[in-house]
Image 1 (tube, rainbow, N blue to C red):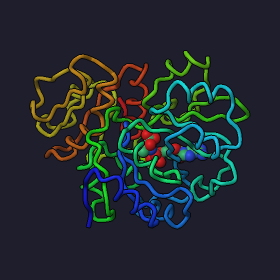
Image 2: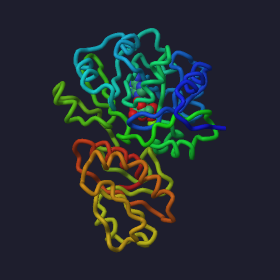
Image 3: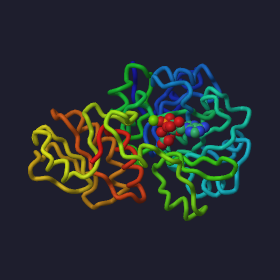
Length: 323
Ligand code: TXA
Ligand code: MG
C-alpha cells in the first residue's frame, strides 16, 4: 500500500523508522533511505533489484553537512559546489569514515549532492541523517519524473511518495569525480560540460564505449530501456529504409514532424529547439511512446552540446541499433 502526498513530517517519521520514501528532486524522483542505517539502505537495493556493487548518491541540504561525509574537498570541487548547489551536479570525492560501504558499493569514494527541490530540502532539514537515493525506477529502466511514473512501477513496494510535481530538469544529475584532484566527468546530466568548464577549466570525460565506438546490435548493455525496441540516429534515413510499417513506428524528435507517420505516434521534445526543454521532456515522452501500439521507436540524435550530450547518452543506452 502506498500513499502520495506532501507531508514531510510523515516522510521523516517513515525514514527514521528505517523504511524508504520516494522523494522529488529537480532531476528525477529518488528512492531514499537513511544513509547512516545499513539495513534501511539495503531495502533500496532490494526494491530496485539493483546489484549491491552499484553505489548510491548521498543527498544533503547543506555544505557543512556534506563536508562531514568526505575526507577531502579539493578546491575545484568546492568551486563547483558553490556555483551549482543546490542543483543537478553530483560530486564524487574520497569518503570519510561515517559513510558506510553499503552506500558506496565498497568504494573508498562517495557521491554527494544537494538537490534543488523545496520539499526535499525541507525534509532533509528535519532529519539528522543524509538520504541515500538512486533514481526511483527498477534497475535498468527509465528514471521517473512524476509521482505517477513511480506509482506505475514501484507503487506496491513503497509506503510513501512525497509529491513534488513534475521534475523541472527531468534528466539525472551530471556526475563529476575527483581522483588525485583530477576532475573527470562520469555521467552527462543536468549541468552542461560547458558550464562546468567555465568555472574550473578543461575537464576529462570518462571514456564511454557506448558513445565512442560504433554499436553492434545486441551488444549494448541495455539501460534506460523502454519496452519497445529503440533505434537512435538519423530519422530521415530510418524512415526511408522502410524496415517497418509506418503506422507501427513511434517518433521521438527534437522538433520535426514526419508526414508519412501517424501524428499521434510522434513526440517533439521541444518546438523551440531548446535543449533544456527537450531534456525535461525526454523520459516522460519515452514512457508515452512505450504505451502506444507500435513496434519500434525511432529517436533522433541531438546536437552534441550542452544538454544535448546528456540526451544522446540516454538515447544511446536505450537503443538497440544506431543509424
Ligand atoms: O539526478 C540524480 O543523480 C538522481 C537523483 C535522485 O539525485 N539520482 C540518480 O541515482 O540518478 P542513480 O543511482 O540512478 O545513478 C547514480 C550513478 C550510478 O551510476 C552510480 O554508479 C554512480 O552514480 N555513483 C554513485 N556513487 C559513486 C561513486 N562513489 N563513484 C562512482 N560512481 C558513483
Ligand atoms: Mg538510475
